[in-house]
Amino acid sequence: MKLELDITPLADWFKNYQKPMLIAGPCSAESEEQMLETAAQIAAFYPNSIFRAGIWKPRTRPNTFEGIGDIGLKWMQEVKAQTGLLTATEVANADHVEKCLKAGIDILWIGARTTVNPFSVQEIADALQGVDIPVFVKNPINPDAQLWAGALERVNNAGIKKIAAIHRGFHSFDNGPFRNAPKWELAIEIKTACPQLPMICDPSHISGNPELIPYIAQKAIDLDMDGLMIETHRDPTVALSDAKQQVKPFQLKEIIDDLSIRSATVDNADFQSKLVELRLMIRKLDNDLLELLAKRMAISSQIGEYKRDNDVTILQVAHWKKLFAESLATGEVLGLPESFIKELYQVIHDESIRRQTEVMNKVKKK
Ligand code: PEP
Ligand code: MN
Image 1 (cartoon, helix red, strand yellow):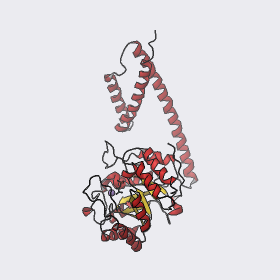
Image 2: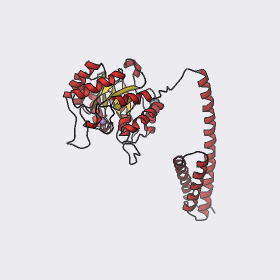
Image 3: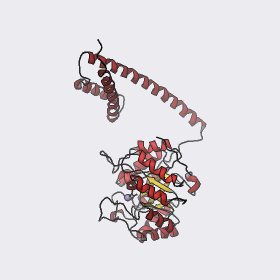
Image 4: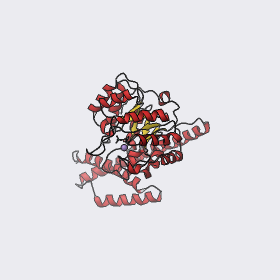
């Protein structure tokens, strides 16, 4: 993927930036007291964080709580005045952008339900022309890295340089234990295409419950992500949206305190030379693996020819089952988990079948 963005580094606009950048606050603004109390508790242990609250909520069904509306902007101003925290909220159209700019909201983010729609993203980008405000772009609901990249480009093309991507997980048929499947590879794809783009993880919307948040947050840090957005409410049991996944401020403190912060580089010659040595070993082994796979596939092609010449089908279920079971057993002895062997053999077998099909479709040798 190609993604060229003109970006102002985080440290150049976020005063006292320290890793992780923390964005915390309730899913929705509900009352002035709820906002002020939650913000004060967060500011007490993380004064350098950014306070989030949704003011206009894009709910899946109408007649649920669709956000407190414009009055919430006033409460945001009050939060900033009383705690000194920067403020952030979600915008979904030009009207929201204008109201936020007028109210002096510090940071805007585009939500997952908006990123899916290039018309909406463009409308927001147009409303941001000539404005100097940080804008964070959540990944789209569906697992489509191009759509995410496109939204980042539209915002950047409008002249916004303080940009970050927010990874909040994806809707998929197999979400596993998560509310939204993390599909880390999509965040990694974006980060690889544009390494200078700050990446923030939203463990709340990935997890859907507080229990998984520490695990997701640590994994994000281990993947060298720059920040975390964690929904925090003074009393999640009475929250009007996303009640099941919000944490109390003291739980947020525990999550942050328990994180092992690791950096991508370290200024230590011994560490660097050992790392280079280990990486060389891996590189060599990877080459060996690829050579072995090439040899294996060449034999698959030979088998294809042999089957073709004898009018035998490519797939021989009993044989495939036996081979797979044997490999699982070998994997177990070698300490390789079943899930890994399964996925690995799936791709190897697919490629083997593809090759044999190619051979089968060629004219029969005499
Ligand atoms: C939110 O942050 O409360 C929200 C609506 O998130 P998302 O756009 O990721 O669903
Ligand atoms: Mn939410």
